[in-house]
Amino acid sequence: MTPDWSLLAPHRPVDSGGDQYVPPPSNVGDAVARWVRASGAPVLLGGPTGVGKSTELAQIAAQLQGERAVCLIQLDRFENMRRLEVEGVLSRVAKIIEQTTVAKYTLKDIADVKLENWIISGLGKHPTDIALSAVRALARLAGCRVALLIDGLEKVPDGAQARALFDALSPLAEEADLVAVAPWNLAFGPQANEPLVRQGERFFFVRAPEVEPVETAPGVPFLLRLMQRRLKIAEMSETPESFYMVARDAAVMSGGLPRVFLQFLADCATWRADEQRRRVARNAQTLTTPSPTIETGCGVGSCHKTSSSS
Image (cartoon, rainbow, N blue to C red):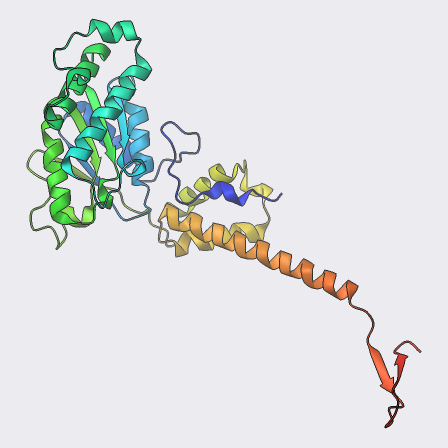
């Protein structure tokens, strides 16, 4: 069996409710969903690059469906995060809420929600008021509280910019449950002159699972299951022992970070494929190269060539 290595897609998070999802040993997504249901206080989600924050946020969205009107807002898919300003983030939030509303409800349902400051009539209003109006309209249509799950803010490079964006989002937490991926180094680290996490908010740290010792660490079977789901391998017994050993070594070297683990495997597969192509090319060249000749009887005025087979 030769897997389709392109399915590893190291930089692609698992979509909400996707069948490729493998719960991490920490079950942080379950913990955040329980907090949202019980508290309603804002949640910041942080962790190192490649640990799976976007994937966990998407799964939290799936868990809250039915209990909340869920809007998963992936800012980094639409905005230049290095140049994102307050007006931009609020406008994008309002637009995603509007799209969610239009996709889920009929025009008659929406027309029956006669809010004076619904987003359609929001021209000239402050972006915060437009976003709040969109939240209220969706909550009224859904008959339940809105949950806004915002991804991408951890990619904002400047601490002051990040603080301004989170300040702009804070009024929405009065009307909706708010879960946002945050730059964890600014939340508590030495660069955090003014911590992002404030009184009443909860910070969940998404940790990379332990991968050593390899025989007992929970991170190794977690990463191997992740690889199986991505490559659509039903059982590891379908693969050669050498493949299993390489995957296990990659799990250890990744430090438990799913993206790094998947990238190691993708790089190994690319190198192996290139090596096989080079080997085939070498073999083909050997088969097509003519037999060498031996020069004999070379004199001043003439040179006779005799085949090596003579």
